[in-house]
Image (cartoon, rainbow, N blue to C red; front, side):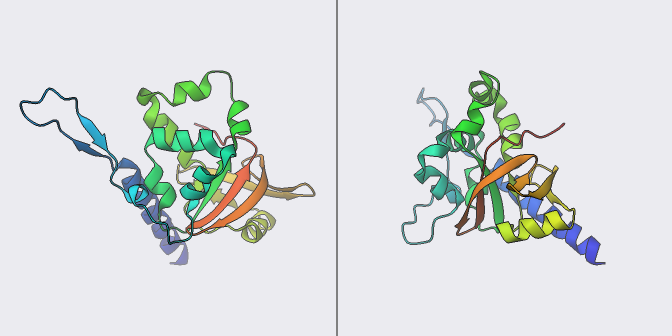
Length: 192
């Protein structure tokens, strides 16, 4: 019964993230006006809030080492998933991590025709759960894998050098209003 309930909760979290990812409001041009179709973003990420604690996207936008990640989040249209109330855990690759990818990969992924592929890769960096570093160590000690919003599972390991997820080292951990950001040194490309 417990396992079935846990699976149901995970499924509900994935469905909620998927619904948020697919939300994109499109406004049609007015009749008689030859203006092109206008796309407006009206989800949670568009809310301006200067009083609440910073969420994962707000923190990423405030740091110069995450400009590629922020550009990818915006290009994929997954901003609302990253500002979701959570709890969620974001494994955030630095600009240097994106630079390790083969030349031209990032530019190709940022093209509008690759939006769904980029969204899939980015959701492989989000666990719909609360994983502070202490919990990651416990998961590693128990030999458990982390369930990601992409539907993939990632290994978590504890070594003398620190914690790694999906084979990449966690460099730093930051608490945000909707969960945790773990800064990582590689992009977690899902295995298909």
